[in-house]
Image (cartoon, rainbow, N blue to C red; front, side, top):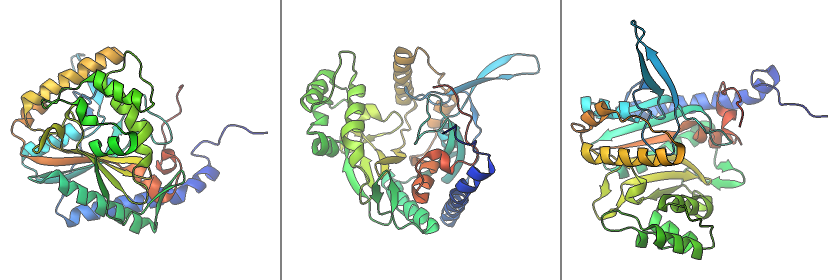
Length: 351
């Protein structure tokens, strides 16, 4: 006879989870020391924001502030501390990091949780390649702290001490799917949906009439590319098409792609980095396009933070990155679910 799993707070289950939770704490302490040794300032970003972020497929938790007069103002729990951190760059900070509780609706599973910990850091005046070196150092730091010689997830392994492989999206699409990705992107960054649809169908993947270019891009990425990333050694997947990098600046050598990379280990995405876009007019245009897509798909949109765009106009050139700390802790601990390394998981809700 079997029954429901014991609640996370039951003594027996907590005892099983406690070693991983304590290891999580040690890794976080080691990371804080790593940043302090490099003259980074830790900043705490407010969770309540005017806008939770303006990416089409991120869903936020909404609330409201009630003033003394009873007036109600919509607010959101942030999906990332990014807007707040960039305002601090505009204010004059040059190296900062934030260990933030962030909130994303519609997300729960082995690698997703509605509330989780995001580690973000920013370097003013630095290329986004500097963040690639940071990623390699932090993977090694997590492994050294945990005593893990390998990161493991679902039978896939990564050597956290190995030099990461750098792979562009164009190279990845060609290697793992036989698709010339940039043949469907014009020099202006516009995308050709029909050209990519033909290539995706030719690669044996499903195409339906209402698929957008972005839908097809994501389908190939998830089905054919991500399972091969971060195997044996970490992978840095870089140079995303400009349409898939809403907050990143164009790459100087090719306007079709952006200074964006993602870090993978064991087939798991761990981090997302940008050479930051600092053009407020272009950023507003991209936000509006993202919110139009959100309205089309989900029937809702989020406000644009005009205060953020004003700060962007005076923000210095910078690079920034967001790392899913719980996921990295999970790999370092050998856990199989993100909830195994979260001290107090969010209550279960209906699917």
